Length: 211
Length: 211
Image 1 (cartoon, chains in turn red, cyan):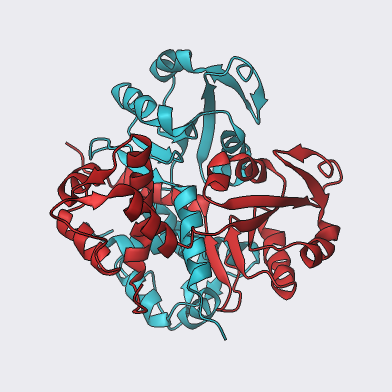
Image 2: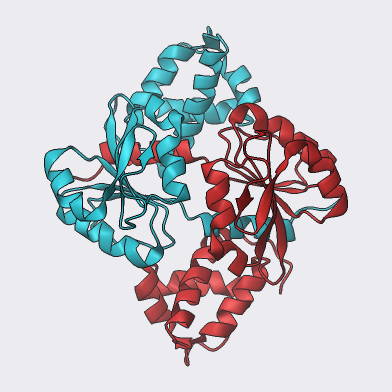
């Protein structure tokens, strides 16, 4: 793969391509033209070709794309050709939802630990793992690899826990707390700000085109 | 407020302004300069002024912004000066998390119903509401206002349920299912594709600047 800088907009679109290609494979479709992919995804064929050209084009357009190959190549670009050990901080409903979602494990994101400070939750089983005491974090990270920390704890605790995790060597965060973590730039942070998402929806409700 | 078209990028930033202004108010700060806001939010002061100029500027910069006024005005633009009746389709962990999150109600998003097809879940209490049988959707929507439907059901059911809801008059969707709903353009859809978010994180893990 070329080492040139890929634009953030292209990167943002790659997971959607990956999702469509996965669905096509599930449906037993192993070859697709850019025109047909364009129709299904409702983006222009030229957009698709431009996006794919960032990565060398992924094969002959005349014959269409090989779905399995294309999915695999995009998966490699997305870093999906390896496993990630995920810990979840906060065993509330959202933490449960993430720990139980089978789709993540299928993609290589394996939940290896769930932590909480609530004594009533410690010891409960979620999926394959037991909720552990947040006080045991340091020992856990010393003993096991942790690639991603998912933060599903309250805003008031998230930043401090994230800083502690960075000190312990964790370098990627999936942040659901309604706060900007402000971590060093070599730390990867992906935010899911649900309240902001809901506000974008209310904006759109107020500003929809009406007949 | 001017009727000119505001760019999607500006709209996307408004909820973050709203979040910071809410936090400032909670801290008892009632006036802030664009310079100080810029420092806290880590965006340039010129970006802030440009964004706000889309809406008339929100008052004298020399004396700083009035935090409560600014929060209120941005809230109005975001459509937060009213209540929204929200129903949740799918009483799994994610549905529970959304129904229990107090922050949404504080912003005016009131959960008025949770629906599932699973007989074991029907009748269970989540927060203030009882899980209802999905078969009762039509009657519920005929009897009560529904402004937003949150879809936390499996991909295989989400599209069909969304189409049914559109026929019943629901015009806004908060979609957590890993599928594009492809609804008419007068329907507002805000997607939260968690698997795609996780893939962007794994991309960033693989492509971080390393010292």
